[in-house]
Length: 616
Image 1 (cartoon, rainbow, N blue to C red):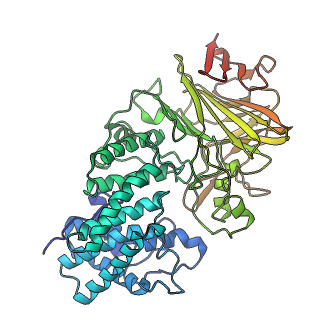
Image 2 (image 1 turned 120 degrees about the vertical axis):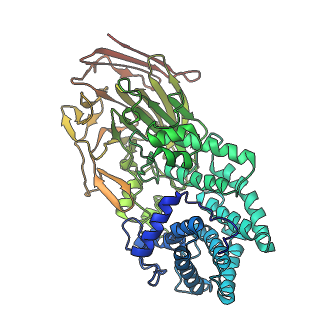
């Protein structure tokens, strides 16, 4: 048997043995994705879009996601049992979708990203099928005509989404099919050269110089980097500048892996498990930092720094080894804040939100993605509020009240219309005692100026300080929301809260350091009058989780200062604690079993932040 000219471009980055096992299972049992129905490759493929609730599933079908493991398995083994079903599916798709004017065709058939992902798979099927002698001339002509349709679509700049990750996958497909047939087709040679130029443009547009993807979602950062690395590994990218930048992107990603080994699920990120075995980590990742967080320290090495600031992209991450178990990655203290608004793409109404893990447990969590289910009607109330999808669970996950941030008057932060502010990071400091202080600032609803200070002593306490002022003196009802991981229990206790911590000797307590804000009741799995107290780990999955907030009513200038402390007892000195009217100076005192804590903060108009802390 003659092997195909080039190996399959494993842009999905699936390991060889995993692909063979997966491909064998698909042939024997069918293909399934998440909670959607099983598809047998021996039966007619459901190309049609039956309901808007199946958009995501129909998208993956038209990407030929069900063929990915088969093509990888054939590339590795040359066993025809893997390529024959792929040829049948490709022929069926080409026969049903070559007439672009068909009224009953799924809108996902020639959807931008689907075309890019399908193009490199179709190119490989043609090449592999021809080399294996499995294509007669008629079938080869039919598939080649379809490939030229893909080339024509991708050659037109009007079809390319340069501003987001969809265009990135379009270019990946263009590069792969172009390289595979450049020597025998002038059209494919043009596709290869065009793809190379577009890739440079897209990397500059989609990633900031500090290596962060600009779509507000670490899982899209991961997915886009996986494709970039796969293109490098398969020889589609050879220039040294791009390869060096890819390393910067991977190192940045390493800061967004939680101690639980899941990816930080800001924006449209699922709670994806990133843990792999050492051999897989060495294959999958190029940097010691990513290998370390992917294996929990079995291989690789963490950076010596405990604080990562990404000033251009608008992110901060703190990761500190546990004092009692510095080698146990799962017990690390971790804090990450998202202070970015680069575009509407995958942006939730989550300005200045943050998450926190400590003492072997996720504590404060982000809402999750839930899924791209239902389409909002153009001009509808949801559409005007910035929602592209209408499923109630999806609408909740995007909402301001679903994130650890301030909510004003029950409204979502606007995403449709306002000019993106880019990065809201202003200043930060890490002092000798280990305290990290981060200042972020942005505007809401034209007239509301808002500053957030996070002050964090890993393994001990966290203060969330929010100051806001309406420049036109409009009064507001404000809520400072917090959302607990679903395995944690919450009890309202006096004016504060008690949180169960299964892996901590001391419980976690939350209390307001100021006299004005008042504590809400706990919320858990509620749907009326609005949804509150939910968390989504993956598509079409949502579970109850506790939420609570501190509230202020009818104020044009306000301050919240909420302390989270691991302690058996906690009391605050309300008469001594204060924040001045401009929010630039603050002092706080609280007492627990370790002594009396005093924390002072200064935010001058220019210069460095001033933070002092003592325990006596």
